[in-house]
Length: 114
Picture 1 (tube, rainbow, N blue to C red):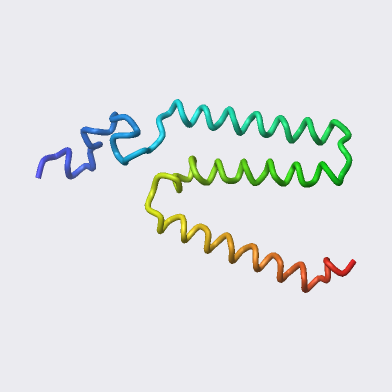
Picture 2: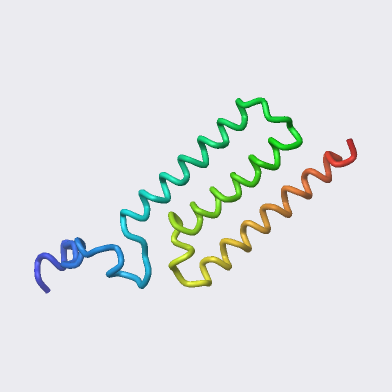
C-alpha cells in the first residue's frame, strides 16, 4: 500500500467538474444563478412587507415566495433534484411528519377555534 493511500490522499479527480461525478449535477455557474434568484425573491419579500400591502394579499404572497425559495434550496443545494429518488422520499416523509406534528400542536392549543 502506497503512503498516499494510507494517509487518505485526495483522489486524482478532485478537481474534476461538478458534472463528472454524477449525471446532471449543476455547475458552479448554476449555483450562482440560483443564489441570485433566491436574493431577488428575498428582495421581493422585503419590498412587499414595506410597501404597505394589505394583509389579505401580503400573507399569501409571502407564503408563495417562501415555498418557491424552499423548493429551490431543497432541489439544488440539497441535491434532491439530482440524487436518487429515495433521498427525496425520506425528505418528504420527514417534512410530512413535521407538518402533521405542527398541526397536532396547533389543534391541541385550539388555535383554529379563536
